[in-house]
Image (tube, rainbow over the protein chains, first blue to last red):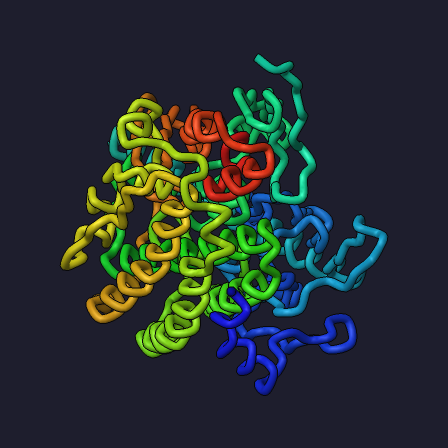
Length: 160
Length: 362
């Protein structure tokens, strides 16, 4: 009879700690390594390169460089951690808790620069562009001047 | 000759964890023919290779099946590494095999619970799944996932696992071994269990070879087929490897083989943890598979030999990815084992074959 063969284990289970728990009331603490969902640490460190979006197998991340916006769908995410591993600025982190239960599985989490920051960023970008343009212009001018000088020197030489 | 009747079995049935349909042709109470029909969980994962690049696809292959998930990601990664000529580090190869053997243990313990539940032995079912929980906790603690743990990747193993953690895993498994022996003894020596399984669904060695059966199903018919013998990955570094065989050929022999394979897996893990070399676990993967390059590899999954094929087309997407899984090989054997059994024994025969329909249909 199986009952007697399992007797030792049965007696042991009677007097040992219960292996199960009353789940929704008692929730076990998650392991440190557990993968629940991802989040962005600081949007200001993000360079909007879009690597996380390209590596995501579940299309759960969209990076909009023009709008400086990072959008994440926690209920599409399969918590594989490919984005965390690939992020060049180490700006993504894996959280150990899963997203809460909801009926709205279209929930998104958006990290975005504020309007002022965007304006500031645009201003800096414009300044950089202007500076680059000015530098290019100056270089061109210098090259033209040099050429003219050379030509003039050549002309002088020919004149003599 | 008595009148023939057809009893539909499945796709929804208490003994079936996954949907498969069988038309059982009966003469009185005896099955004379079984006509299987699959197609209830087809998801078209092989086609998805056109939409996901080769590094993303490892997460798709993991989702072929929930029980052999690590095995599929391992097989796929090995295949793509062969395709692109990537040499992984020894430590990564060892870690892969350790985790593959752990997932074999979790698969066999799950099966043992299902079988016990199938013949109404509730206490054994609970104990088997309690032990399986130990293995799942090891997975979650180390890799962060319980069933699908995204640990294997093209180029190595994603988690850096310290030697102390590995020693801790072995200590846990040694504790599990004693309890497991009690459970296994109950299963194999109990008279009520024997009365349900001895002599039921017999397949001879010749028949097993003729039907190209694989895995524990074939090994229970004394066919020494085991991909681990080929020594791919860290299996080649084992001091000795003998496949677990039994010459019974019936349901009882299949149980016996799987029960002993769990103990064998513990031995393999202990040996590899002792031998594991230090070093990196990932090598950088650059470039795309070449146009027209092909690679294939085999792997011993918990249910038997799985075959992986991939073909590159010069882009980041593979041209073709193909998996042949053990259950698709074993369905012919299952039909053969079902002929001439009593209708009441059909659940036992199907459970001891341990069919994995999600793998079969992908």
